Length: 286
Image (cartoon, rainbow, N blue to C red; front, top):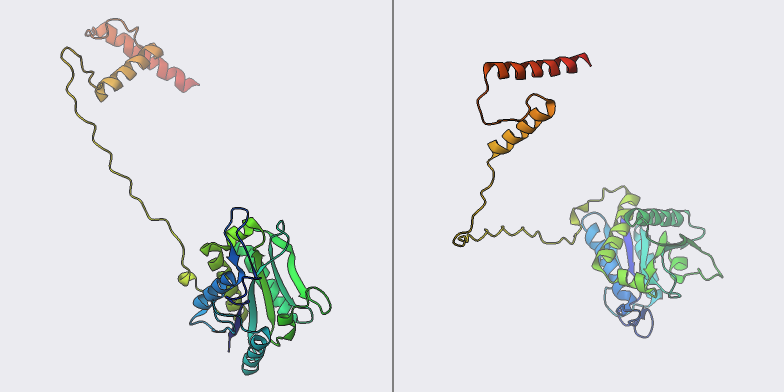
């Protein structure tokens, strides 16, 4: 079987006082769980009909105790030991810090593999976006990376920090539906790749601008010329071509340009023909 343990970090009642930030730097406030839930919801939507998902933290509901969530995830794993887990989060730190990072248990080979797949897919979806350090963080006991969720879950479980909401530019990005949906796409795509399931982009919702047809040009108003005013008529196409050829004939020496409108005599026609013949012959000798 294929099952994703899809954890939407924290709950709707965790901000305030924590797990969020007030408006600052010209960017609105953001509760972390609202971001986590949006990403997790998109994962579930994209994976519907492909593989089973289970979340112990309901979207936009009060925080379920971490110990209870872990117990539920472990029970799910015992019923299907092919399960993998992802926990979605927004990061917090100094206002100057930003970037993507993913955590895994340091002794879990499958956890590390899953983390590497998530990082690679993120870079593919968001080329050029900031990566926090190397982007990969092993959770080691007795260090700042000793995350309770990653340590106590028995399934290969990764904790994903999608960006720093404490950075104004990153938070502005995290507040957009586009970024949230694309983060969900990254997680869903990795889950499908893990189980060898073809990922179908047809469920992706892409925001598109409405097609605006160009307005038909307004007809030029017809105005009568003032009395005594001469109206210039456009030069006919035949006259434009005639003038071009006449100028070219003078340039090539076929005619001297005198009396252009008078009929030519046989002698003059013969001279022009001889000039043309001589010009063509010289071109062929080059």
